[in-house]
Image (cartoon, rainbow, N blue to C red; front, side):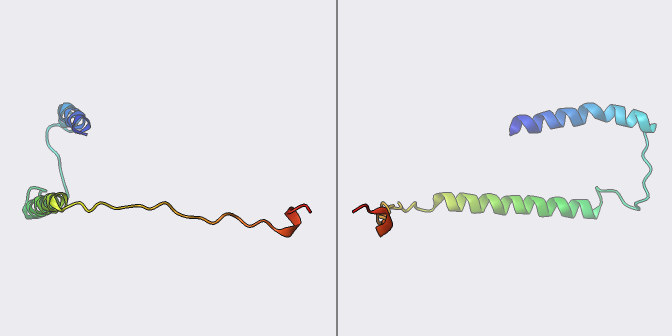
Amino acid sequence: MAVAGSVAVVFLVGSAPGAVAGTGGTVESSVPFTVAGPVGIAAVIVGVGGLAVGLLRRRKASKAPVVPVVVAPLKVPAPRRSQADNPA
């Protein structure tokens, strides 16, 4: 998992100079604010908070005592044969 993430970051960083060179170094946008504005910062805060809550829940669940489950064999009655199958 970490290797796939590292490969993705390498491709992203490696392709960035070509993307900037293709646009002339500037990017025009019709959006009046950048992603680094208040919406982006709020999204990052919510994401980090969700990550922290998820990790705490996972840690709490892993510390719970494990109750062994005893599975008894299932007793299935033998199939009944009809009288037509029983030669006399």
